[in-house]
Amino acid sequence: MNPSEHNEYGDNPAELSEQVAFVASMEQARLDAGSAGEYMAVMIDRYETDQRNIPALFQLRRIADFTAQSRFTPEFADDALDTSNAFYAGSLLAYDVAIQHYDDQSWPLEAATLFGDAMHDLARVYRGEGAWTTKKMQLAADELLINAEWDVDDEGDSPIDGMVRRWAAEMHGYSDNQRYMMMGFRHIFTLITDRELAMDDAATFEAMMVEAELDQDFPHTRTLDDLRRGLWDTFVDHKITKGPIDMNDGVQVTKAINSFTYDAEAYMNQQDELLPGDDVSIRGFDTSYIIYDDSAPGETIGLLAQHERIEGEFVQIETMQIPVIESASQLHERVMGKGGDVSMESSIGKTEIVSVVVLKHATIVRTPVERPSAAGTARHKRPLASFPYVPQDKYVAVVLNPTLEINVYE
Picture 1 (cartoon, one colour):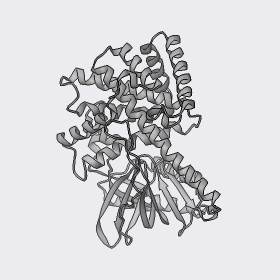
Picture 2: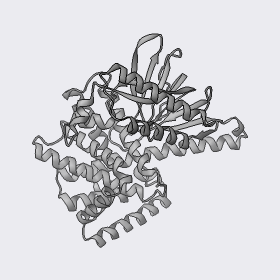
Picture 3: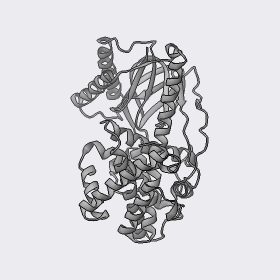
Picture 4: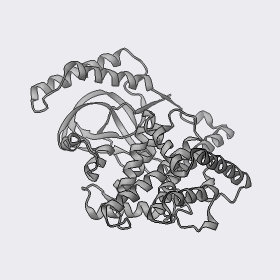
């Protein structure tokens, strides 16, 4: 998939021809299924029964549900649910279009990270440090829909735009639901093409470095997937072996922390992939981190966005008791109040024992992110990368999870 297919499709005849051919294949698949609605039903069943796609689909549903908070959403609850379902269907169609261009088995998880980060960024801007309020949620949902608005007429449609418009009209007629299905497609497709633009820029930059014979100065990293997996398995096995811990019993908690830490140290002493003093880079889906100082009380807890990574000097693997961190999934269940697990909401404000990767001299690196215009038809220049401030006399502890990506600089 070429990023220019979405908005600048008329500039390159080859890209336009490729898009026409792709749409023709999609239309044939629709005919084979019987109708646009039947194609969508088969597609939804295929993805929802494949566990690899569940995290991405959860994020798509989360985004679609959030649109119900907007002032532009129909007033009555049943109508709002219908438009949210239409937005979800359009989002899933964009996911289907994208996944046909990727053979990499890691794409579903990458997509979940991408979609989750989009909502994380929206929450960061509109919720800020405080709690969600009705007004904040309304403004955030308004922005989501405004940026996804389908504002071109039929004659200005690209081949893919036109296909989605026809399918939405076939399924919903010329109604709010048609418009919401098109907006769902536009929102997710734009997120995916923006991602490719960023990847293309990174590849171009590295190629320029090699051409200029500066590649020897370009830092290289090595991924520590086996080590992360081993640490996680050690932590989980220990939890299963020891059984439930009464978090209100200080003695039990202290014993558990010491025992967990001993196991982690034993595992780390058996390997040489990651040693104290190594420079590392960490990122991941729903990744939580804690900024703290051993000499002073208090700590800062945050979630790492998809376009951010934490870099610093590795200190050690520790076990900590921390407040339950509100992850993206918990935020969805608590705020939306739809289909939630009551235990998830009740866990907020409590504490848990976690295994963490501790760094010092750490920096949170935020890579450039391109933003579409409000109409979604033009692109702003990318902002320069920014580096959120982390006091250099404090430690950063990154909570271990199964998706964490740990890279060590060579």
